[in-house]
Image (cartoon, rainbow, N blue to C red; front, side, top):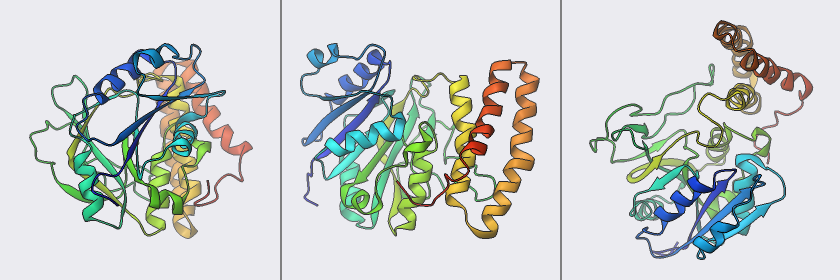
Length: 301
């Protein structure tokens, strides 16, 4: 890897042209000198062709159908040229110097194949969303990011090997994903980076967090913070992750815990909420698994 390798910055747009434009504007102030910017439009109702005039330096790729988070990013990766690919949610804005620490970390740690930046909640008084993550517990499929909810006072401006990357700002070494493959597309929304993190580690690569790289995240701008769509995919994909990534007795116990404890508890919560739409999508999430019982193979694209 050269000292200033080309970095491909990839973001996905779906019915969010104004938010995407805010990200692209922030990328204009990036201090790293060797970047290409790629926007993949995931079949928006009104494709953002007007952004091509406002941001002529950006490469736009227009998909004919909505490929989801993993599929859209995979499409962007396939047309990218960078030795490093940085996936950014379109509801993020970046610190101008966020790329240099990532490049330096890749140079200093050759076994690291994936790096996530520090994530700060946008317009929330410098509150941390992500400062590294130990990984999900094998039984519950749950876990918590280090520093979540804390004020950012530089206490997590470190480098650490961690168990789970965050998809809102995730840098991938091309050498790594050429070996591991691209992200699994059947998730569509949520848990893609969780699944991908497991595959990265299973192939002998490390995942790192670099606190000197800072990204501001508006979170859930595309689907809504409490939308039925978000509830459906979070519920469906938590179980899909367990089916794909657990084996042996751990797999049996994790599935039993989910089906006998986690899912019934969540269903009671949806019933108590009084929202028939949320209750319906929660039930449909489990029905999807009944119809797709063969989708659990490990480490497959």
